Image 1 (cartoon, rainbow, N blue to C red):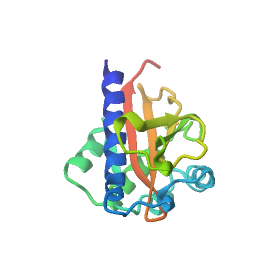
Image 2 (spheres, one colour; image 1 turned 90 degrees about the vertical axis):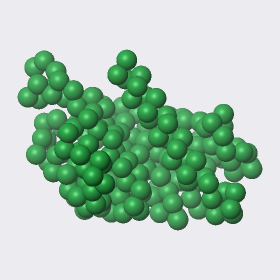
Image 3 (cartoon, rainbow, N blue to C red; image 1 turned 90 degrees about the horizontal axis):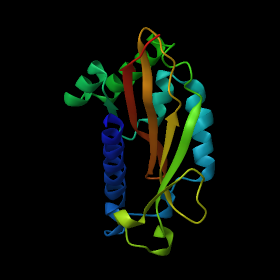
Length: 190
């Protein structure tokens, strides 16, 4: 039940992000320069994930101002509630990963990578929920608007484990940025 709720929340978040990013289409603001390329998605793996939990890596990618943390960790949820500064959120997340390194030991192991796009957008298709697609392969002739990296479930350490860890990247004004991190930690038996 909890996982269905989280999956529903993710779908709502993804659609909201796409609708917000595509709102400019009607006003002539959208361009193919805002599509994430295959090369950019591969660069994220090299430049971002190879350096985690480096604060500078977070700051370099989260600098576009749309960064959000979705978590059940009390300190992280409090940051979102109080609308903390980007620097404070990045610092908290980076320090959490550094200070609890056993929980995040498999950070480079992706369970899946999802490419989200509006089917036919490059050919003038209307932006709608019906046209929203997600693929585990980089789609040909489509405008990828979000890349989500789902990290494999973590190891049990001190009766806790990372159950969900997702990094969502979008592109705006020709710059790829970290739009959000989803982090859910649950109890476990050691």
